[in-house]
Image (cartoon, rainbow, N blue to C red; front, side, top):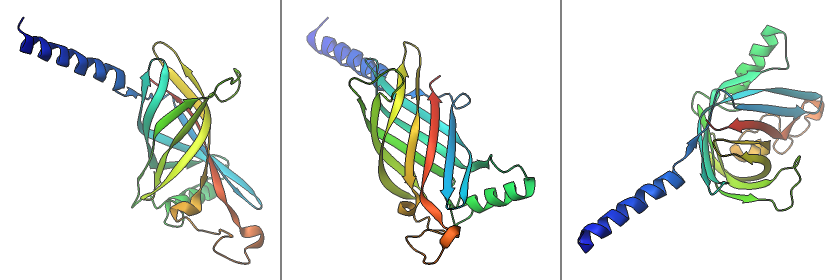
Length: 199
């Protein structure tokens, strides 16, 4: 084999090895779950949200990066049993006061930095993530801790992300922007609780 052919062979092998390392491992959207919790002065509401698509990069047994697309049109309310009031809140969350799903049907979370937490106990978060959440067309940085389990053929992660809705221009009944709301105020931060598994 002459030198030029040999170089091409080496380059080709390196390229495909790189693909095998950095190609994203898809998320099993059917076995994964995302829940939300919003709080107000007089109580709270909770519900669910679907992952449309997601993938993570795993290298040498560690999570490196990931990207998740959330279907904002899938917002459900779970705590209100009365069908009329359930649908009323669900519709309001989808309207422009909140997530404006007609104009922004998708939200995206992506991260390129995942750092193992040294000394984490078995029942504690063992990874720290830094990434960006794109919501209503607005991008802001987010960081959080999560419990990650990487096996030979699969990986899973669970945790909670705290989001300040006002950073994404969701101002409805926020004390930051409106005075005199009293017990009608809705807190600015809401929680996203996730449990994701790869295929």
